[in-house]
Length: 323
RNA sequence: GCCGAGAUAGCUCAGCUGGUAGAGCACGCGACUGAAAAUUGCGGUGUCCCCAGUUCGAUCCUGGGUCUCGGCA
Figure 1 (spheres, rainbow, N blue to C red):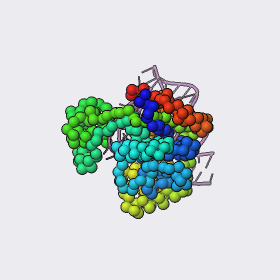
Figure 2 (figure 1 turned 135 degrees about the vertical axis):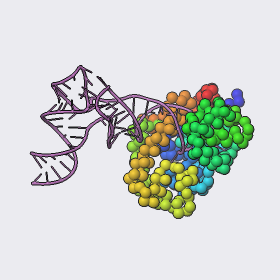
Figure 3 (figure 1 turned 180 degrees about the vertical axis):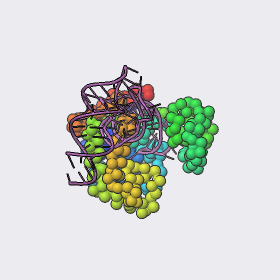
């Protein structure tokens, strides 16, 4: 059996503020594991409070990967994450440890667990800017029509006003001369997977978020943002689209109040939680869900023990499921 | 107590000369293959404060009541 030779990977997913950090730390300790972060906001140095980054003390007990690995001015991407994550996982396997891929960035997790092979065309900022300008003048729909002529299959899958995705598709087509829809590949992931989903009832999640936002401010979120701005981190950088940072920048500039910032953060975080649920669905048969309001870590651990000792793919339905 | 304004979706409010109602936000559901904590599509919701009257028909007009807000006492 080919599958039996595949190295194991534990994936831990769930919405923001569900408690992934705490649980995954305990699990990694229990199983002598290391954590690979699958969170698009934890790469950046100096963005700690607003991103709810695991504390240094927490990271001391278990090795962490892909946290604090770049400056806030850098732009990450799906492909870069995929490569870095694969590297980190491989090195963990190489020294005989169990890797835990932990995070809430749905697209990034999927890329790993579903073996996505995005088109190999890197972003072209100049072309993107050009297309953005064109969209401003002629409207996003016009670009979408253009895409529809070049690649109807891609256009059908992208909402006509979704400029981001329309531009990416056009970018790939222009730079390769081939259709975008024909350049998205998919392989079997090279791991034996166990995906664990952590959840809590929405109302609980929402009130945890509210409490967390309050704590962020007491812990100095405004100072953190002030520091970033003073270091020349422009609010335009992708890293600054992290929830709360621009809101805090507005407070610092006297454009809004702290209460307004908090309220905005509460709203946006709730919307974020709902969007995350689109990637991690309770109905997904490949995810083993645990409601942290009513399960103990012991139950999760025994699931992982069973997985680790079984050596088979019985836990992993990803392989069988086509889509 | 008097005068004025108001009472419509969970919230803030819109509703032309009477034909049982709508926008934003919230909330729910979806898409996502090198910017993803990004970007984006779809959706439901209502004793139109209560009672009576006029009318073929009242959220809208008339009378009464209740409550809220402001001003004056």
